[in-house]
Length: 414
Image (tube, rainbow, N blue to C red; front, top):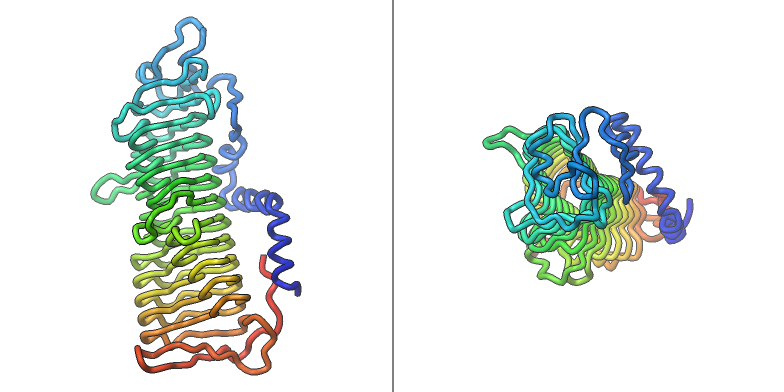
């Protein structure tokens, strides 16, 4: 087994190789539904017309080309493509898409839509819409989705006070399905970068920066949040921050994301709350969070946390308030002030095969968090005797749990 510092160095050196394998895994999991998305991604769109319908052009010099995007959409039919040239940018308008069409920009960085202050610049109401290749700016929100099977791919979106991308639901409980948000660059102020209230949303390979209310917020089930990068570049009070990935729901997969906080200012990396169950948090890199790298909260149960790197956080993992039956294994807790913190009746959780290295303190628990399993973790060096885990039963009553079989060497965790 390799020394963990060497492992971590090798992981950083192989960053791009890991990204390749991440994309390969996603393709194997979701097959042909994802393949067309990945193959269509590029900074400049290569376009030779629609495969299914007519093509309507906006901007450019062709005869019959439209000057406004909305006019072209109004004259399109289901299956058509509206292609927007960049030479007439910026397009100052708000757009409603109520037909199953493709809306394609010539170049992501130079095909610009300036929203005019209405809540969202683009409002998608029809199923099977593809929006790709635009820079979208608005003093409020970017794109709102109120339908199924849509793709928002390879856009550059800036918003304020409203999310850059919002996938909503039809009141009271009709949740939209199978929307894909991929390869977008997002900056947002006083709002979330991406928020979804609908099920089975694919949120992959996005880059989110300059947010101060959460990078990705999920209030639904069966979503995949994978291979995103969230870097908080704003100096704000951490008390008012959500998790950079904030999940209230069940059966969500959160994998291969990179979350980098602003030291002393960014509150939480990944948050699971509201009785969230059977969520899988795997192979994420989470660094520099003032409060918690991962926060499991308020009756969240039966979640799996594995193969994550939690580095240089105030607390690597906090499990709080009646959270049972969670499994934490094969993680690296390194250079945190406190590796794991358990608070208020969090019992029947299993902690095994983790590496604890160079933390100021590895574990602390208090207020009836006394019935958890600690097994074969590596505690910074080889141990002959069981490793004592010291906390408090109540405010003034100390308590000790034990890892009876501590590992003698750090695990090789990929």
